[in-house]
Image 1 (cartoon, one colour):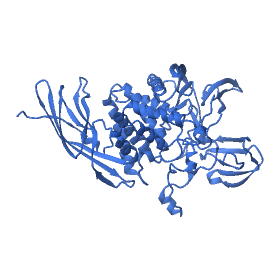
Image 2: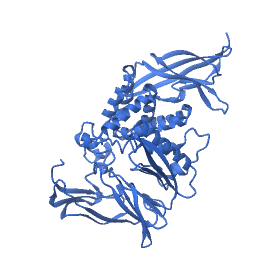
Image 3: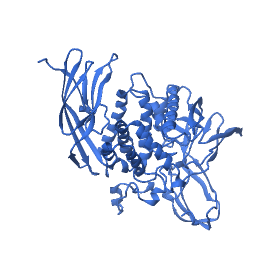
Image 4: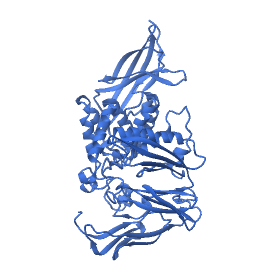
Length: 556
């Protein structure tokens, strides 16, 4: 369609009712031929069509007016100290179906057909629409922000100039390469901590400026977050591709919301999940460290490799960011600690599938179902690198971003078809069934310990486990069928270390071909507990009974 003239411009305004538009105009003569004021959607018919290569300007002015406190839907985007806006607050081009009725019941009540949550992976329109935003494949981004003079205003790009004028402070940012039209604006009274790190880009050292903008008094996790940035850039640049920018800035915003969001070289980060989180030596996982790694991973999975807006799109963004952050964590924490994170993600998946209102999809077809692409995805990718090797997974991902990071070259965005194909290429024939089970089917397990004992054999201990392993396959409606098991699954034995923590002294995969098994394992430290899939790598319906305390058997 690039060669066809544009005869109309569709404009969607933000839905925040505190946002009052003074005007929205197109830079050439036009007439509003259709308008839906309730949904703030307008169609401007151009008097003279835009020909290929033509340009025009969209001008708009709006303000936020919030009087006191409302019962619901308070506007917290613009506040006295900690404003955070993103591109969704501004007009966008084209029709968005995000405001349509989505549940089957609501649509039925309005005589509408059920609506699919996402387009199939073969849909041409979906393949040419970016997962992050559908406005454009890439824009030249430049912005000037004005704020009160005791605050710092920040957006993606590199600072070109700052100045004071009329008792206000102004900041001019410009990006040096095309980026998705996905941007943020923040402004607050910030303190700043700065550092640098170095990566290798095409055999040449490249220096990256690292900055954290934080509220005075919120210094608790700055060191951890800075370390997370350095470790992440080192791992991602070495294993996937070089980082595309020369800086990264983490920006604190108030805990009206608890999330972080990754824009080009800029990550707004809620104080509620980073800056004001207490992390102690007893904690198994440093949450601010993990979230930092996850958000930086989106500079690859989302920005370098933009998924298509089709089924499985969030897997190429969120699941791969989960995997990337887990690999950074894996370098820093023992696997006994990673277990706690995997267990939380497993629980998220199990809760989500129990609440599913429409249909559960296999991982490769997930339809923006967060319990799948976050929860299940983290466990699946961690298990996959355990089965086929971390290096093999990274080779597949390196090829994926190399071959599918350029929209212009391919004429479309990437899908999970390419992801699964690249993973199959690096997976031995003997383990191809793992790819099938993990990505193309809905497979769950019920693994448990029936009996667990040990006996002392002098300097060693003999552990005897009676295990029950059951494998099931579900359809999209949750109907489950037991299937034959022929799977390699971890068996582990724990002892208790000097600090009272569980420590694995044996972890090895065993082949299970039936529901009931007896396994004997010799260890050289006194065992305290043991089980099957003890680190919760697999999708187990009841992970509580995977391990069991060991009792000492009476000598014969």
